[in-house]
Every structure is written in structure tokens, then in C-alpha cells.
Image (cartoon, rainbow, N blue to C red; front, side, top):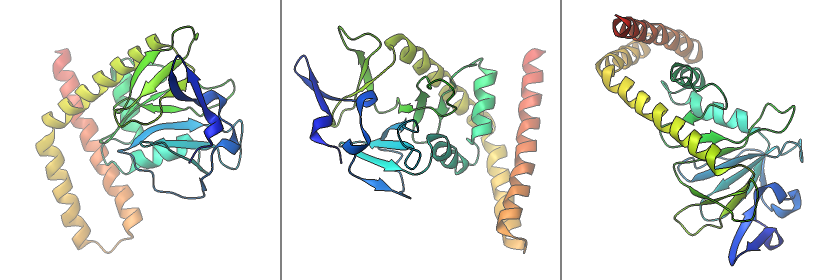
Length: 235
């Protein structure tokens, strides 16, 4: 999974410094691989080191492997599978809560916080804050140690504890809002989904074209509900 030479030691703690990892340290590479999102600790952007394999995936139990897709592509593809928590909806919720920069992504099985991207890069590395705790490494400026509860090697990332605490709070607010929104509109969502299944049984259109049309309709109706709710709150 990972070369033993990539393991550092500091103050009696073995850990992996993400910023120091070399391509040769990772022994597994895949063109396509199904990520275990419920075990995912990090998606690391390594596009500056490799154009062919721009993403390092880190899962629980010290599972490290490279993928051909970018972190942005992988995350957005995952979000598209969640009917009401896709990337546009996530952005809308973050904007509503005044989370302006480096917006987290909240999904049904994980909550992702972005690390600051390198200059001129549009892709980020992402931490699943649902599965890790973090602490500042004493004597190491802007270096935070991520730990999970399974005994995996801690991961050192280049950021500050204050940044992660702030993003953790953004994630918490987005989760609370998403849950509130679902509970408020639960019956409407169930009605729309029921209609979608009935329509699917009766239609002979292409599933891809039909899904796009259906989701556009659901999106408009959901937007209308939220607009009416926000108008009521303003009054």
C-alpha cells in the first residue's frame, strides 16, 4: 500500500507526511476503482507530481492508492449520485449560510473539508472530518496531525488547527441546515419521488434524458418551496 520509507517519526509517533510523499511510495495504481466512501479519510491532489495519476486516495487501515481521475471529478461524481445533495445544492446551502470560501461538501456518508490549493490550481485535497480528529504538531509550524479511531497511521497535513476548526464549524452548520430542510420538506420529497417512480414505469423515453427532465422538474419545485419558505421568514 505504502513504502515503509514514507513513514516518519516525531516525538515517539509514527506518521505519514502527506506533503512529502513521493509517487514511488505508493505501490497501488488504478485506472478505475470504487472508493469506499464510508472509509475514506482523504482525497489528496497530487496533480503537480503526476498528470497520469493526479489523486491519492487514503482509506482506513492504511490503504493508499492512486487514481487517474482528479479529486474534483471524483467528489462531484459521488455527489451526483445523491439526488438532493448534488454539487449545486451543496453550493447553494453554503452560500445561504454565508460560507464563502473553500466550501465544505456534505454528503450522506461523509463530510469533506478542502485544504488550501497550490497556486494556479483549481483542485483541492479533501479531508473527511467525520472520521478524523486533529491536533497541532508541537514545534512544526502549520502542520496538523489527523487521527482516526482504527489504528491507522496518523496523517500530517500542511494547514493550521484554527483553519480546520473553522471549517468543522461550517460543516456542522451545513449538516444542521440540510437535516432541517429535509425534515421540513420530507412529505414533498416523498411525493415527488413517488411521482418519479410512477412516471418511470409509464414512460418509454431514454432513462438518461428522462432523469434529466425529471430532476429539473424536482429542482424547480424544491426551489419554489424554499423560496416560499424564505419569503415567509423575511415577513
